[in-house]
Image (cartoon, rainbow, N blue to C red; front, side, top):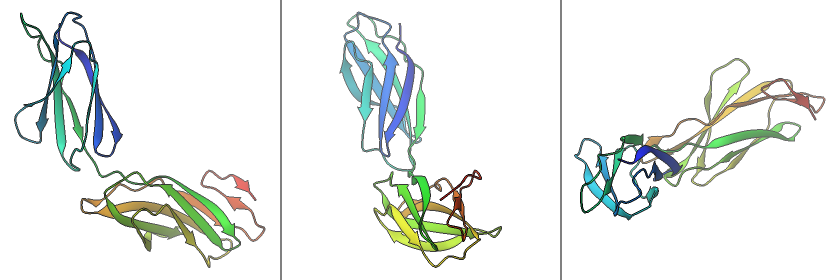
Length: 193
């Protein structure tokens, strides 16, 4: 029987993990083939009998990869497994959060998920306005202070990475209002000091 339920997990920006079910039990090993973009399938690696996973590393951003697996034996190779496709993307920042640093300052923090960015773009929206560029921050940045804000005004923020592969997706958006009383209301309407 061919391997089945081939899946791909993108565990890092340019690294994936292939997993499959071994349904044979008496194979000599497995052959994994990979197709890059519009190219034909090519031999990637041979795995020993009993294998059910393989990492594939150093993939290229903005490239599409297709994988398939088959069991091999001296008598007859299995059919190919299902094919799985993944597009490797420039991973944007995530987990953007917002805290009040002092009476008129917000501190933004986010998770840096990329090894390919040249920097970050922070955008801000005031009240019901539109998002506009607030700041460009250097590679590896994970926080920013927005100072001199107006009390009783609502501010919204989002962050994206920039680099040789263009721009990443935006992070999640965060929003808060600076109340003169020292309380903060988050995007869900929760108010706290």
